Image (cartoon, rainbow, N blue to C red; front, side, top):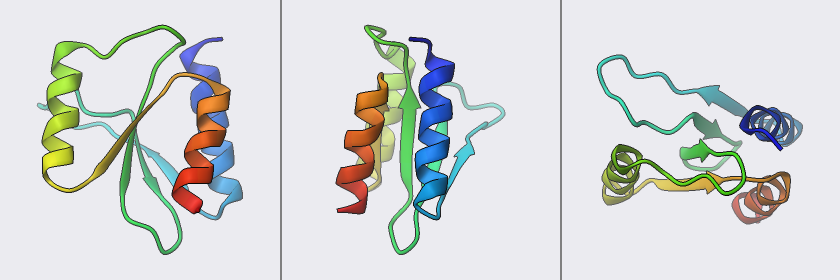
Length: 92
């Protein structure tokens, strides 16, 4: 399964829940997560998407920790099953 297929599933699931999964592009700041997920009545959540078995690059790990230290949740999703688990957790 490719990263793009997982990303499409994430967007569909978030939309079905009444939210948005916005593409996160930050000119001048590399390593930011792929998506900002906004769900009704929930906090901002950052999501990095990976193909199965892919790992975060060192800069992505750094950005993930920076966001976590600021109090944000950051998820790494690498499968369709992980999308479902993510949705259950954040909507719970």
